[in-house]
Image (cartoon, rainbow, N blue to C red; front, side):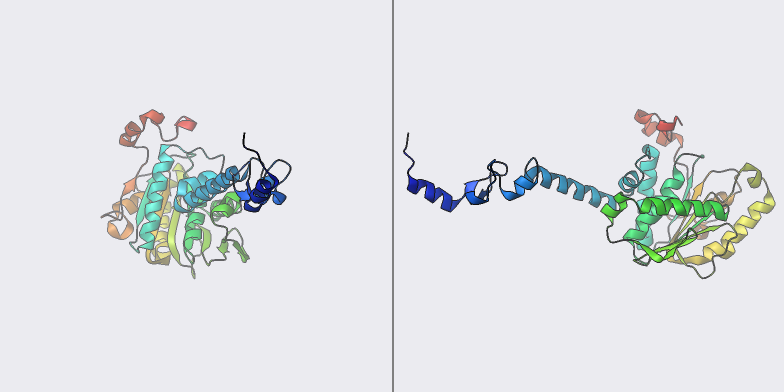
Length: 304
C-alpha cells in the first residue's frame, strides 16, 4: 500500500476534493461534515435531483404555453379530459393560429349539455389566447348577461391560479379593469362578457365567442326569438370583429334553425362554407369509432 505523506495531503487539498453528492471538486474547508459541497448541503438529495425537478417544471410550463389542453388541466385540476376535449383543443389551437394569420376563421362546435365545453371555450381558451397575444380583445356572449358574467368570473378564477402564474408569470389582471362584465390584462388583452342583445358598442373583437345563445328548447321553438337572435348577431355582434378575427359558436343544438344552424348554412360570410366554416359535432360516429378504446362516447368519464 502506497504511503500517503503530509505533502500528498497538502497537494490534494490544494487541488480540491470531490463532493460526495455531485462529485464537483471543491476546497475541503468548504465541505460539510458529510463531505458535501454547500449547494448539496442546502438541497436534500443533492443538486442533481433538484435540477431535474426544476427542468421538469420548466418543461411543464413551456408545454402549457404552447398547448391548450395541458394549460386547462393545470389550471382546472378537477377537469377530466376525454378524447373529445383533446380534439376540441386541437381545433381551438388552429383557430387561434388562423386569427394570428388574419384568416377570419369560423368554428362551430355542437355538443350536449354538461360535457365541459364552456370550461374549454369560454373560460380557459380566452385566457390562454390573451396571455399569448397581447392586445387581443375577446367578446364572449351567452343567452343572457348573467350566464356571460358567470363564465367571465370562472375565467378570472382559473387565471389567478398558481398554474397560470407558472406558465405566464408576466401576465396579470389590470387593477383598473377587473369587473365580471369587462376585465383586462396588463398586456392590453381584454375579455368582455355580454348577453344576447346586450350592448357591444365601442368594443372590438379578435375572437367572438357565442356560447349557448339559446337558453333552452322552448326558446328555440319560437321563431320570433330565433329571428331576434340572428338579427342581433348580424347587426351588432358580427360588426365588432377585427380584420381577420374569428367567430367561435359553441353550444347545444335545440333547433335546426337556431343561430348555429343559420351560421353553418349561411355561406362563407357567416362561416358556413369554404375552408373557414362548417359545422362540427365532436360526437359523430366516425370519431367514436376511432376512439373506441376510450369508451366510444364523447366523455367516457361521465358515461356519455
